[in-house]
Amino acid sequence: MPVRPIGHEDRLSLVEHLDELRTRLVTCILAFLVCFGFAYWQNGNILDFVNEPLEQTQNLGCEKRSNDPLEQSSCFQVRAGQAFGALDGAMRGLQGSLRDLREAEGLPPQTRAALSEAAQQARRAADAARAAAGAVPTNRERQPVTLGVAEPFTTTFVVAGYAALLLALPILLFQAYAFVLPAFTPQERKTAFPLMLMVPVLFFAGVVFAYFVALPRAVDFLQNFNDDDFDILIQARDYYRFSIIFMGGVGLLFQIPVGVLLVTRLGVVSTATLRRNRGYVLLALAVLAAVATPTPDPVTMLLAMGPLVLLFELSVQLARIFEPKAGSSRWDWEDWDEDEVDSEVEDRDDALA
Image 1 (tube, rainbow, N blue to C red):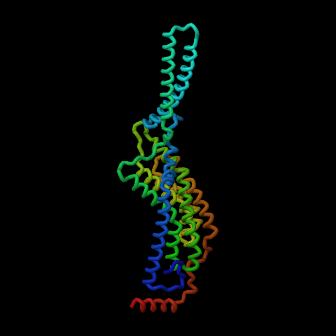
Image 2 (spheres, helix red, strand yellow; image 1 turned 60 degrees about the vertical axis):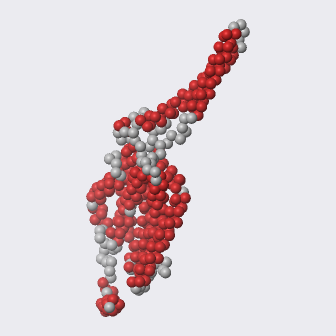
Image 3 (cartoon, one colour; image 1 turned 120 degrees about the vertical axis):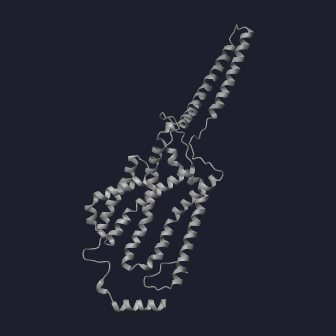
């Protein structure tokens, strides 16, 4: 079974093409399963990684006044823990003072007994305050909630699957490229191969940008929108779906250089036309950024649009360097051999017959 790209000059039968397709599909499935096994093994770290933008948007340390009831409850826990800690120190100080006072000379037995009882009460109160201060939750980060019995398992399974797909993406793209490679001429292959290399690199760059820059801003805006009117609980399934769609959308938007190089190399649009219509392109990029960032927050849209504009400008300059020269064509009509073409057609007809 072939595991390498077939040459442009090779001639394969339909059965051989199907056999090659089966081999490449099996390779893709095996690569995905290996990546899925690794992702499922590390599902805890992956979930923590995906939850990080959500945790960054939560005001759980009383840094600012919040109208969210859940954040107010968390702030109350922090303040209560601080108060119990202060009370512990105060009561132990009072216990020591009462003990010293009890040892003073000239006190009647009844007063000494009362002071001893008060010192014991102060010690018990100090012990209770210390226990209460120690019981305040140290991990106050709100995690996504699950509502069904099987939802923790199914959600973890789905997130691991998307992580495995991301890890296996280079292998999947290579197998797709290797399967369609025989249809490319050597000249077309020089264009297709760099573009195929750019696709995963740009997609990963888009995902990284979305995760570290755009997603925290979007989650922060949505989480704090009218938060005084809602008890905001984040369902795990919805949050992970939103995060995956958001990062995947930004990753696809980062494919703009591939599109620009493709249309210019094929002669569909010239770089001069793109430069003249830059205003329309910027408008289209703004619309794409607005669609890819489903928040009405203009700052998030501008954060997503900025790299797109930069990528477009860089891709136009790069396409200008590699743009076919004027007068050149994708096909060399002077080398067109009608007899050879007729012979190939007759051979194909005989094979089909």
